[in-house]
Length: 217
Image 1 (tube, one colour):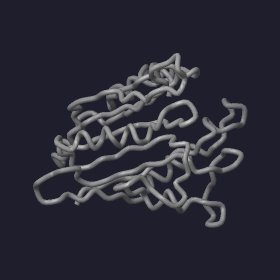
Image 2 (tube, helix red, strand yellow):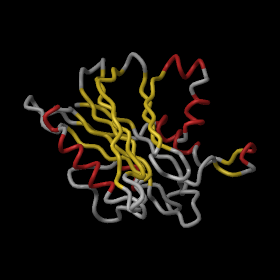
Image 3 (spheres, one colour):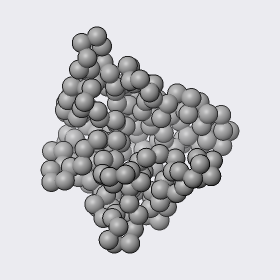
Image 4 (cartoon, rainbow, N blue to C red):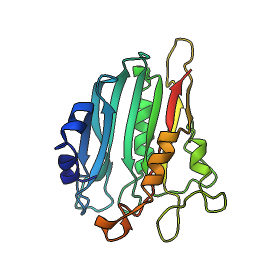
């Protein structure tokens, strides 16, 4: 998401009324896009937000890209969540995934009840997921053979992911964060594969979106 897109989105009175947002622009990426997290007003309270920079491989830059992180409180369940929106790009960043996971590990003392992160990982995770994290079952189920939809990219690589984990250090009785597919989440994913006349018959992106529904138990 670039700065102009975020600005245009929040020119909508309906969106501003219902959602809050944090957005960070990648420090040196040529596209001048970035990462954003939106949350429902009233349902969630923002406790803290910050940008996690990823070191650049180019010597002339210190940082090239970044992740957006939000610590929020769910006002219904009184559970704390650590949320991160990412865009990994190993070609021009130094170990971006490791940087994010080290940050998450450093926040263990803040005792989040659940951790959710995801975005364009530029990695297919064909056999090994990030240590300690699960991914929604739907992420592995969408393919041409089962009658569902496929990624609109030419080579159909699966590089957009959501990962989650329960408690990262709570001393109380363990809270389990789990995910399930809902009609709303699947409708959203399917909509990202639709072509639009305003886009000349193309999809809004060369990526198919990913979505899931989470619940504490």
